[in-house]
Image 1 (cartoon, rainbow, N blue to C red):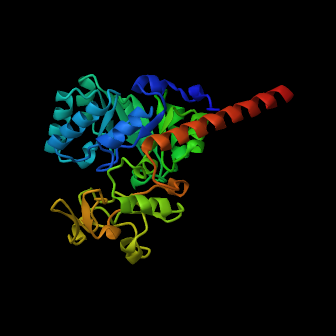
Image 2: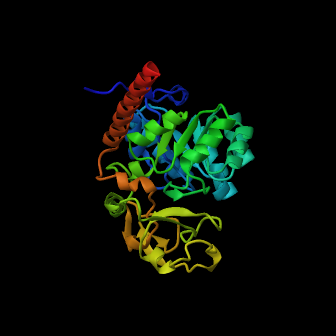
Image 3: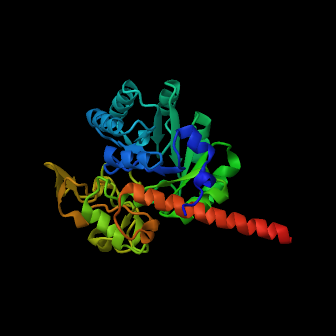
Length: 346
């Protein structure tokens, strides 16, 4: 018997026009149209990861997503880590194509927020600190994503996801989504019990058939027990100094010893170790291995959150989405039953 998923419906679902309060993280390079469409068709809310991508590629991915589904979606950009001219061209192309929702990350850039808001678009802003949350609210964000240090990829703050979310929830009436280490229904159930409007998952969807990540990256996640992730700013080429990422251990991080943080991108060597259709990928760059990547994949940034230990196989995105939803619905129903019994015996 299928669990009653109505317990999962939150105002976020109505705002973003999706059935389930589960967001696909806008993972650069990985969250392309194929994965976004699979998440949308499964009832979740998809975000295209278009960080620093050329406007032409953004247009190609948007058109491919729309050809696959008419579901709502967002485009993820990072204003604070993108050349202003490129960012201007990215936003302009998205608006020309009728994009109605954006997802921003890292420092709040008022000019970028104002531009998409003045165009009538919804803005989802991911933050890693309470200060960034306040700034996003002040600039007019519609949804906040509280990202904890458990998250894979670029990590903005140093607070655990649920602790940060609790602080954000105490200060705003906006829908708050929790991101970081969530890979199953228990995480979603815990988030909704806390009062959050939903969750965002990255690693859980990276290890799916439709993700544009390389199979090597996917299998490293499957083999992980969750304890082999670490936070480092060694993979910082192409990003501002001090931008830490959570990755799986590899030979590059092992060679760093205890020196995981404090790296200056200007002091790191620019040595090609892999290629994407002829484009070199450098050791210490933020690039992760994609389907098109060849070369020394082991030394690249293998992004993964601490929830990797709960991922045991590569499956279609809809399968993972349904497992998360069904498990969460079952747990919430059980918890509600227990609370009702406790009230009755009090």
